[in-house]
Length: 614
Image 1 (tube, rainbow, N blue to C red):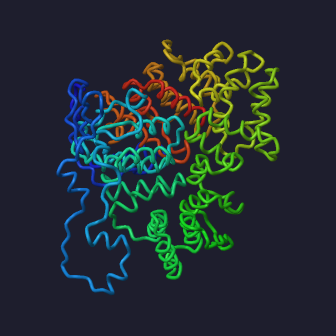
Image 2: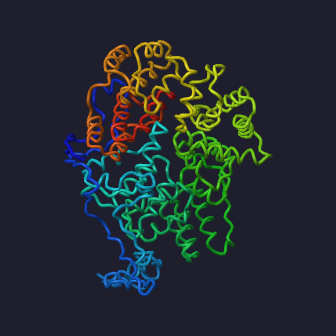
Image 3: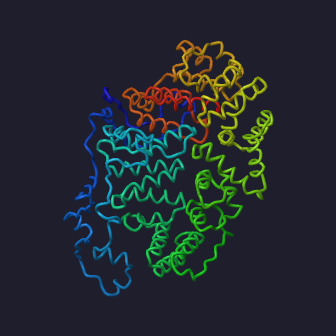
């Protein structure tokens, strides 16, 4: 990067009075971000010095044999147990009451590592996908100020309004990245894991924490890791963090986890006694303790039966949902049909649930970006293959098959429309489901009235080349024309005022939001002249001008060509539960910044999605 960061301000709060007048999101960042002094990301030839734990030395090779390196003196000291001192000797009665863990802690025998020294991994760049695998460049944030990156990641605590924004943010958070200058790599990992959990990407968050040795966990990373394991119903997976990391947590959920982990460590009697004490003291809801007792009992002889009763349970929590799924315990219909979106996202990705159980959450997962079009089709294919399945999902699976393999194009289109019906606010998720079926339809004049929605369906899966086949079929100024004007790759011709006139005159969306988003997207992609931008923004009573700390930050990140920071800032600006929370100004800056850092494909898809869903 050639430029030097010159970003000022206290926090990336969206505080402009003009933004507030456009129903902008509330302040998304915590206080405490004071005048960072960012620097450009390093050039490829100037990689920053590695930080964190150094990678283990490779094994030596002697005459074709691999010789395991001997642990150093420091490593031997680490594994031999720490020396201990007593301020006072505990009494015999105190020793009798101590648990095994407490005795190990007292005597300095508690393990700190769960892998041998030669297998320990470096913290220089933690992540799931490398640059060669589609991730962002490793050193993208290495020279960026810790305060800026910390503020952005802390402020990311809600799902995205945009499916494509979610996909972009997931990719950025999962990339194998070096920590920003002045930030502990463990803190950087914890911030990313928390952000992934907030997006509902618990499986990706779990993969990220599994890329880090448990011995390197901080209390914050341990808590985030536990949330990821609970979100994936992988209860035992959390045990290394629970047993090896010292935290200040003493809540009922942590104690139940400790009991379960003790049982799976071979201390079944102790675990059951601890869980019974929790129940007798009233710590934690009865249903939670019963589920924990049932789960811990699976580690031993299993002779003690635990009856799970849901009669007095009025709501479903992440803990209950995870344990019930891990145990194969059926959740009552009264609770299952009212699951919050956060648990629906978990349900969609929980392999312990049957296809018929997961399909209720599929629309949410597809619309939010958790499910791909292929994953949706696979799910409904399993339902269709059951044969005996009944209900709306089975009918939809049958109609979906007709939409894909029917011989008559008109019948296929009718089947696609049947699949779209009855989505109850998640219609875009159904468009993800039918994306490839829509791409198989011929672009003929008979289907022109449905072209806009068919193109929106194709673009939901990124099928821009297939969508372009309809360019000669759609009318200028129609929805289909607008989506292609945004999504077409390598478009050279500028959009004219006549085409914009036709679209805005026919726009019946609330406050003509589609027209606003169209103009913002075209301006961000540089596909409309400035004269038209000024004319139609005045006509639609909004402005793409004006600055906030967030707009200055994302524009500056684009100016120094930092795609990782642009992606994080874009995700920060797209948080919300509906497109009503997105402003045209935010969309313009997001699309423009992504285009300028080489992410034009993501910019085009986000802009087209905004118009389709406004």
